[in-house]
Amino acid sequence: MKLYEGGRSLAGAVVTVDGAPLDPRFDIKRFSPAGFEWTYEGDGPRQLALALLADHLGDPARALALTDWFMHKVVAVLDNAWQLTSEEIEVALRNAQG
Image 1 (cartoon, rainbow, N blue to C red):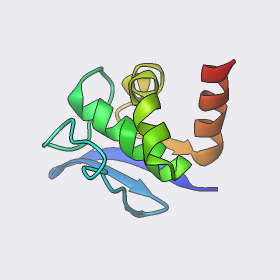
Image 2: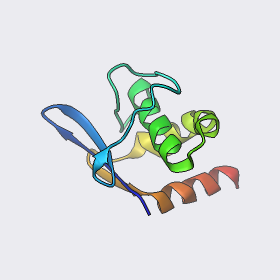
Image 3: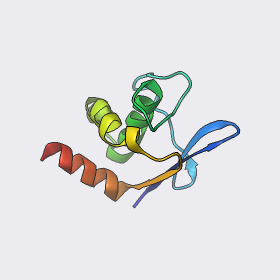
Image 4: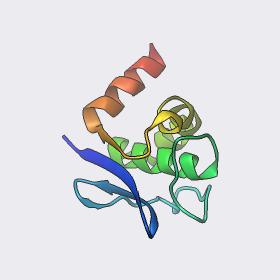
């Protein structure tokens, strides 16, 4: 099970997966040149949603298709510092389809 964590530092928003930096996946789509954000809806949270889904699913096309939904339902409501497990992401995705 993977652990995704986000927090803020003097350098800005930092997101890791199992302790390593999460790839923003600009190769799939660049929503935000500034990188990740959360707690609201916009380009930074959309980039985080895409990166989380791409890492979790391993399917860039499916991740991109679900990005807006995941941004609205999960990323926009994260706390300032947060943790998400791969299991929690999977539950959210099942709820999207149900």
